[in-house]
Amino acid sequence: MGGVWTTLATNVLRSRWFVVVAGIWIQSTYGTAYCFGVYSQSLKLAMDYNQETLNTLAVFKTLGGAVGIVSGLLYDLFPWPCLVLAIGAVQNVFGYFMMWLAITARIARPPLWQMCVFLYVGTNSSTFAATAVVVTCLKIFPSNRGIVIGFLKGFVALGAAIMTQLFYVLYPGDPQSFLLMVSWLPALVSLLFMGVIRPIPPAAMRVQGDHEEDEGSNFNLLLVISFLLGGFLMGVIILQNVVQLGHSTMLVIACLIIFVLVFLPFGVVVRSERASYYKQPTTLQEPLFTDEQRNWNSSSGSQFHSQEQSEFVAAELTEEGKKPDRGEEHTVMEAICSLDFWLLFMVMVCSLGSGTTAMDNMGQIGLSLGYTQVQINTLVALLSIWNCFGRFGGGFISELLLHSKDIPRPFSLALSLAVLCGGHIVMAFSFPGSIYVGSIIVGLCYGAQWSLMLAITSEFFGLNHFGMLFNSLGLASPVGTYILSVRVAGYLYDIEAKKEHGLRTTESWGVLMHVQDSGPLLCHGAHCFRLTFIILAFVCLFGCFISWVLLLRTRYFYHQLHQRLQDILKSFMSSSLYFLTSSLHKASIHFMVPLRAIAFYEWER
Image (tube, rainbow, N blue to C red):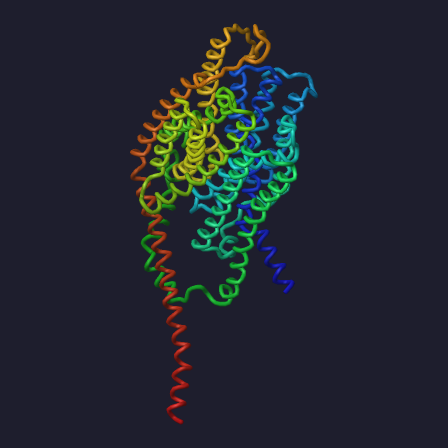
């Protein structure tokens, strides 16, 4: 009995599902980039910044979270995820710890450029974690790209709400210590599980005995767990906004969060490996298919497999310098030189830039409309949950539409941009509760666009250089954020604030040097961000138009991809059906022989 449990425990630790679950744990601690609204006002007051300066810092935060070229190049050259995770952990500790020292006046007040560097280094650590986790898991589950991306990127967004709740327990009543907590907690989790994140050879995956239906059931269980955790966090956040919860209650809530986040996903791993373990004796003692079955399977699927093999050989024998087709493996330069890359880049500038601008300014939007700091923290935490649900939904729904309805993934991208445009319009024309309605729309659409961008990139350009490619496309986020957040939102906000107070300011690097009235430059009222959101709505409409152009260019490619997926499914189902019927026939023969013998014996008597 002890040997059985030892073998099962070994299989669990080596399981590819454990890689996914460990990736979920790591990603859930790197949602700090979406917590900027929690500490932005404290940062603004402590460092005496105006809104344009604060948005400049937000751009470097976005830049750090998007510029993952170094992590992607490192992963491509040295495919050791543990090395990438270790470097990211060191960056995380340095960047956020230095910001905590600055905001608490434990060091001399650094100039703005140094604060930008600290924030960039801290948030850039998330690209190392994302590259190591996402690329590794995509190579383990290549046939479920949208689902895997939705899960892993979804828990990054959900991590903002998780980190906020843990902060209330670890550092109650000390908002400046939020930066201290995010400096050590993500690094600790990365170092604990960096040995688990590793590529698994195809032969080892075949030995584990997972089938397509097993993958589907496990992903469905993880989806249920994620929605359970998100719903629980949403209820807790709403409850905190209604009543004042004591520290002991918050401690119980934190323990429940850890239980749902840690033990339930790990239970999925144990369930999968336990089922695979009890399938192994049958699989090892007798072959899965007899010679007759192999001949039947090869004849039924020969056309598809020969086509697949011929396509692979053709790709290998392509002349040097010939441009690869869409869907084939691209180098980084080949992808950058393609029109699809730049169309997708422009769509991301519009979608991620406008979404990030709205999310980063959510704290100042709430203050301008008269919300309290507790309500603003609640809003930011809820926004991270909607962001998470959007990432889950973007991956699952686009995968479902592609597999079952032959609807290309760029259609989902265009649809999310159209809905995001409506969210910006809701935020522009403020009415009671509009900030909550708008934040739901912005969070869902923003999260969906991240999942769709990664899935489309892998489908267009392949997985060989996916780490570099998706990090290169991620540069669209800081580009759009700088234009829309600093040059539009911050500039228009300061103009409205100066009109409101009748002040003239002298600035150096955007730092407020002199104000007629002591205190920060603040704006109050719906007019502070109205023009900004109108501009963001038109930007989303432009991005929606480019998405339709991309859809028209790639509709035949996605039709071929849909046909290939259907052929794979039909081949698998026909093979499984034949094996099932032949097994039932053999079982009936073995069952009928004893019955005939008994009947003959009774007749003889």
